[in-house]
Length: 130
Image (cartoon, rainbow, N blue to C red; front, side):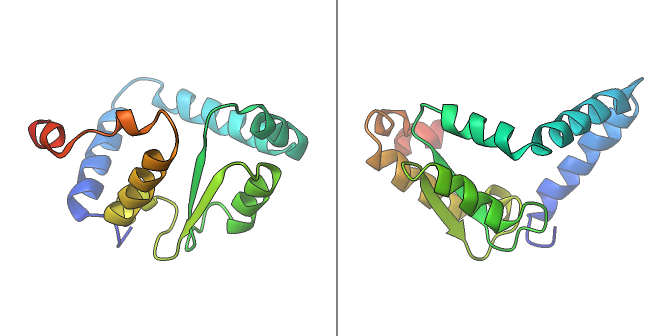
């Protein structure tokens, strides 16, 4: 967390505090956790999902990730050599929050290269008014 903007961390904590005030807040958390564990328990299931992806795909992984091993992302990229795979050395589990400029550079560069995606990149003028 020390690499994530402190204001973003504070906003996320406030959001979680709000969620805790809702009745049965834990049910969605437990359901999501069960689903993830059941899915990841079967490597064949995950590989089937990976093989089924038909869209252009960019897989970005933080080399310092303590939640998902880099070897897991390398394995996914090995199953799909047509995917683009980038490792951000100075990032952990949430590179879009930890190294946003580097993450956006990777995404923008990739979107510029992939046919049909460059039209989705907002111009500097559009981004300034958003």
